[in-house]
Image (cartoon, rainbow, N blue to C red; front, side):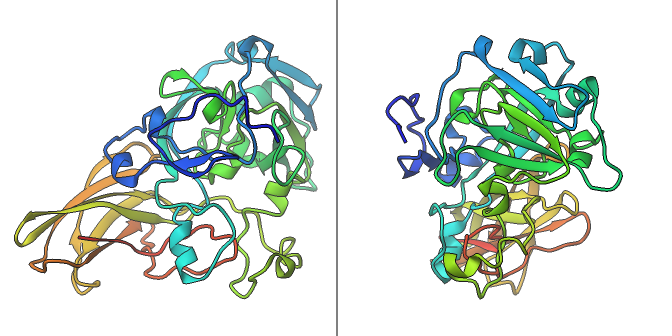
Length: 361
């Protein structure tokens, strides 16, 4: 793969790998903004980053549609524009913590592999309704996204899919986005057009989208069928994993999670703690609590930002602790009453880690 023609990458990020370029911001910087500025939006790539001329770029819709149709970006912009504020999150966020339990396979991510942005584009539902979808009452339908624009490490293209039901939902805000934070979507983050699937892990938010296929099957791509799946804890090698890839479902939503991003002393007896939380699939974040005594007592945090059902939650708290050094933990609770668990279950790919987060002072 040729990485020599990539656009300049942000220098505000912690580089985890150079080729492909994978990088994340310090989490302490991340939580200083309700909506994440572009220069600290993490970068997750499986191949080279490519730049495109918008007027020469097109997306083909085929499969179970009335007629195969190709849309340019100006064509998409003729549809009503929609916006949504949603958190984009890599399934490997906090992988380094899981890897401390036992080695895992994947980029050694810290806890800054997410970004809360306002996305602008066209509703996928509007485009599919415009061209007509041929549904099959005997089989669940899927919308398969593909990018043939750039080579990948494990397949000839990057692909993913979501159920047609989600794509057509009046409430789920699935977009073909050409803007991020009111600016044209940069090549670094998937421009001219990427998929936005609020509530799903970032692996389904396909960048540099150039094909949409309506099908009775999930995407056959490696990244849908052989990656981003939670394998049983006893599976420790790629050889052992071969028998389990078909048995474990493709990941969709990530679990309820929260992270301590900043902690410092306000006074000899008081700590200031700040962080983020993200919802799972059972409802938005309702509360966040912090403890400086290993969970013996919990202090409710103040929620300082939450926008709609797809955004992250920012929070801060003051907690008493006269000790000179120690560790502060956080946990989140969602609107269905689910509470973030103290321990996270290990898996070979190091995905979906959501144990209590902690930070020393």
